[in-house]
Length: 490
Ligand code: ADP
Ligand code: GLC
Image 1 (cartoon, rainbow, N blue to C red):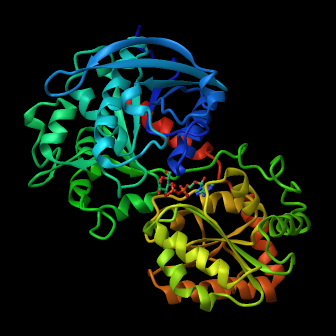
Image 2 (cartoon, helix red, strand yellow):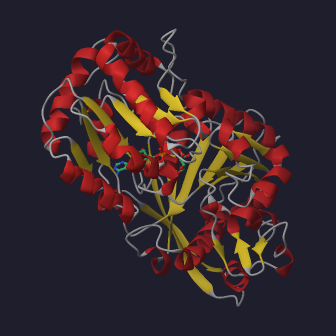
Image 3 (spheres, rainbow, N blue to C red):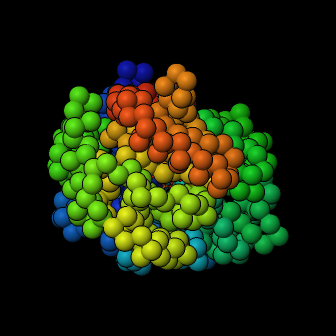
């Protein structure tokens, strides 16, 4: 296929491990859905490559067509694996699903590193091989998180002499905590990559530890992360997850571009899952209607005057849940209700279930993954808690603001970049924030937010309306990515 000339749209291949609505476990799935659509509107051609997991709902599988298949060698001993390409188109974005029963016949995309390392070695290599097979030559390959971390490495080594080898690569860090590490021999075996890459500048992080993310960060042409603050934070000890020196070394190619959300998917004006849809104009009348419907659905006392705090989150240490646990009983009073939607660490699941039993009618711990309930909480709650230990960007605070729900957040990563602190003197700001990772500060901040809600409703309402008007769309950030792609493609 002919190479792009200047007037052609930039061609970008997204490679990542999850994408809404096919598979989503967190914000990565949202970004893989929303950013390609925003880029398409800016005249970019986008193809998304992801694994064809068995857990993709049947209704989407039915829409896929078989684009071809081939055998690909992978491991150090040259074992060959089947690669199938299933394709679907949705609103102009093309999705290619890499098929292989052996690797993707699991319920959940992530099972444990021992199996996940081979799974994503295979995926990274197969995605590049699929682009060659499809004769679709991207200008830029945009890789996401450690699961696609090997793509930049394969691109500059085994694939360098092939058509796809002309593409530039960007590796986006959505979450540095997860890196794809295993023993050197396991990594050598499954990647089939040459020995010279197994040094401390590329793969190695310990005596017997090889790291896929580290290698990808070394080989990518550009590295981005999902907020400007997180781009700085990960160069420090505290946030750097043992890769801070490596990231600092590569800082010239590292930058932050803040996430947005898909404002069509998250739109309180048209959201069919809500009891009452609303805009900035009638949020103050309609939000209480949604709150009462939510209280009824969840078995809470139906009373629109209660201050309702929501939490929608993976239940992991990252999300600052130990702070919430530490202040829970001190935070509760008769005016307060708390709704938790999340799954994860059994410790937190048990703690929240316990509080539900201690505060019947006031606390609901809904320990599930439930998209429709998430929409109803964003619409019905007054405030959303996000006191994260670290937060590369965070999407829940963006969705909350779009739904007129005031975020209560710790000033870290993307939370710091997207939620301006409420100033009681001027009334400015988008939410209630605190800096140090301290339970007492979180408690003070929750109390302040409740005080404004209960005692200064006009000031509260102004925040609600301001938040709904804030631009949390992808438009601006998609343009920043496009500029980056264009600069790389030249
Ligand atoms: P992370 O990617 O770290 O989990 P984000 O804030 O970027 O955090 O994205 C989380 C996404 O997952 C949001 O779209 C949020 O609404 C959604 N989400 C998290 N937990 C649940 C749940 N239990 N049910 C439904 N949606 C959830
Ligand atoms: C990660 C981060 C989250 C970010 C999301 C999408 O899962 O934890 O902060 O919003 O990726 O980039």
